[in-house]
Image 1 (cartoon, rainbow, N blue to C red):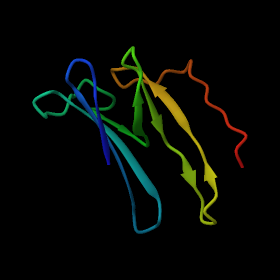
Image 2 (image 1 turned 30 degrees about the horizontal axis):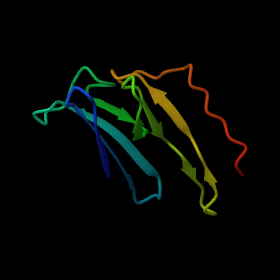
Image 3 (image 1 turned 30 degrees about the vertical axis):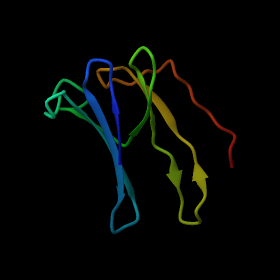
Image 4 (image 1 turned 180 degrees about the vertical axis):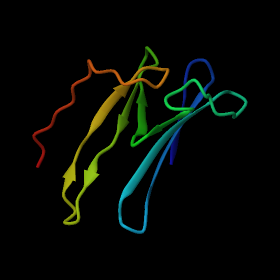
Length: 98
């Protein structure tokens, strides 16, 4: 689990866990400075499938959804989101990492 603080004092909390079927579940939650979930962020305060990694100067943030397969292969997956939790399609991460 990790957290990052935005310039306005709001907090992005990201974490992941592996369920009984070995599926990795990721979530990013936005809390206001009093610790309450910001319902206007993402889908009712939550972005499923991503863990926040880095907040940029403009308060957009890079999130991870990398995949690990049953043979421990790794596929890096990164996306950028606007401060309100909507996906920024202009960020096109690609990797030739095998």
